[in-house]
Length: 132
Image (cartoon, rainbow, N blue to C red; front, side):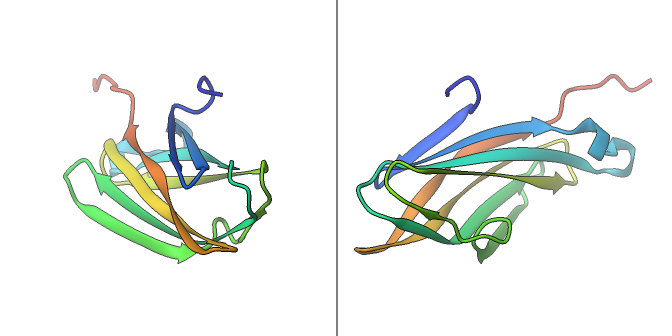
């Protein structure tokens, strides 16, 4: 699992794993546009059902500008994870700099009330290219 997902964090027995890749075909460095795709796997290691309700992202670009993104669910879904189940989704992040970082948290509803689960910090870095 570690080979597929470079970053992971566990909170309240829920593990969030992240794999990130730069997409040169979606990027236009000459126009100041860089794009990354990230794959998230959420694993419910707890002994109760949990439903993902909201997400909060903190996205920092290479100039240190911070953008906070809040929303319901993930990619239009509010998945219910039973004990031992996992949920995967893929999304993307555009930046106006060739590097940056993301981190945040999800809020889940559980039998015992809301749970805040950390999304691990992960860097966004475009490969260096020689300008000629």
